[in-house]
Amino acid sequence: MKKILIIGFAIIMIGIAGFLMLRQRITNDVLVLHDDLVTTQTVSFAVGHDFKFSALYDPFAEFDPQLYHTVQKVRLDSALTQEYLVWVDVKNIVIGDQKASQLLDITVLCDDKPLFEHCLLSANQDQTLSITIDFQTYQLDEHWFDIEQHGLRFELMFTLYPKDTLTQTLQTAYQSSEDLLRVYTEFGHDPSREMIINYHANHGPLGVIEYRELGTNIWQESLSESFVFPFKEERIYRTRLQNLTPDTTYEFQINDAHKTYRFKTMPLHLDREIKIVFTGDSRSFNDWFYDLNDVIYNQQPDLVVGTGDYVACEGILSAFNSNLWVHFLDALNDAWIDDDGLIIPFMPGFGNHEADSGWSGSLYRDKAYLPLLFSFPNQADYPREASGFGYIQFGDYFTLILLDSYHTNDIEPQTTWLLDMQSVFQETTHIVPVYHSAVFPSRKPFNVSYKNAIRHQWLPIFQELGVRVVMESCDHTYKKTFPIWFDDANPDGVIHPDGMIFLGDGGWGAPLRTVLLENEGQFDYDRISDTHWWIEDAAGLDHNIDNSKHIHMVTLRTHSIFIESINFLGTVFDAFEMDLND
Image (cartoon, rainbow, N blue to C red; front, side, top):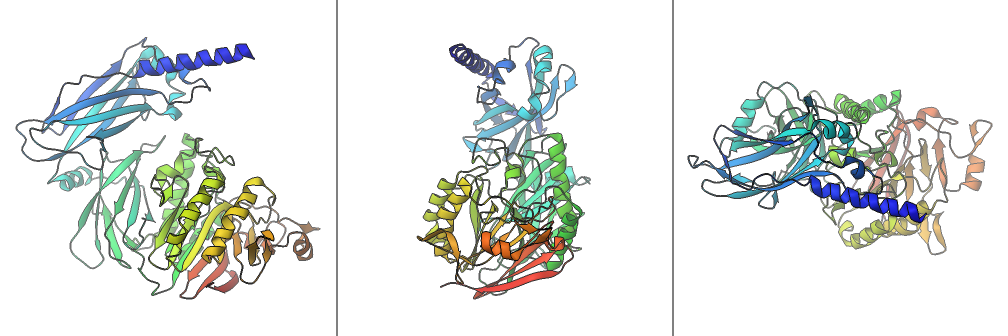
């Protein structure tokens, strides 16, 4: 054992030494940028450079291989008089004589601010770009031997965009582009005034959104930042539009004028009924996944909320998993955009299949795709949101709370967060919490440590907030509980008319399962009511299979919440209304 520890320690030390050897610097001389728009620097690592990849990939070494860090001063050519925005990108990555696209990723700070946020260059002024280039670990596995044997070369490209003609420059560059692949939206922190537009294309480091209120003539402009989509030639673009008008339809164009889309902001007050669809567990894309997407479209909801497990990717980057996510997003594009281009927003929460950590509560395991493809809840904007959980507040009438049922976050920190945010949540009339793993299950075990923690810690807080309905998932059945109340004598709950109903359990397209108890293939209500007291109704492979393929439509009304459960045939098979608790 002692020998193993010594060897492990030695490997770690070798890995750290290798990491330090990887940190290279280019010249700190001032780089002068000219008005030919693009300036290129070539960076090379010769054959025989000691990258120490074998040490870097030892399982004991918990750090990412970082190739390159520099502080580069930049200046505009003295002949230039206007302001320019500079963009830095990595291009033409070559190992020996073979291209290795997407092997490297780049992070750039401009005077200690993220480059996209603000980096305008002025004449006769030196500014500092801090550039960090990292190996993409999902690609490095297949390339590290070749890099060691054949060397590595890439180009740093500094692109100038004139500030005053930035949009025109980009529009001209993309005018003939027909490669806009998919568009999807999600609400910002204030759904009455903010909208996030995501789209995929293969344009360049920046994109442009033009938008205006429907029926007006003046277009406004917003730049889109972009990210590499692993194993795909396309990039992921994201724009956050702010200071919008509440309860208003907008139209927007992306980079060119060939296609117009629409979105609608939410009202400030509950002046009309608000319709929200909750659904989850689509990951196998069975036939009813596509049927339910059409059912959702026909309901014309204001929002669709995902309860987890959209793609069976386990948060691991691979070409196969990237293609699965493309298929998922294309299916939503095909179903949720009407003839006028109006897009139904989608906001997804985490499930166990979004993270390699699965059920460990670990923040440090792979959870690659959801934070890349969607803005919320993936930002370091605590207390509004953290990676894996957060809330969105709709005016004075609705709070959507998305929680992480032990996939990438432990239960206790989220309990602390819920307690800290109680006064904020109480500012709205309706509150609907969402998490993935059903703590009142229709199929899976009841007595599990993290489920016990959720029941004992989160649910009393929900009850104090006046929550009437909680959305769960994960079991691949349909489930509706009796109203459940919590007190000191009943920490796991007791049936009570003023309690909360727990709905789920994930029937969007994942493989269906049997419900907890059956009697010769039939759902047995008597045995359920005796042994699994919380279940009022359930459907699975053993009982009413049509209803197990379902969504839940929640309608917010002034003094009540109305819920319809709708199957893949478009049939409402259950409906109930609950008055709000005082």
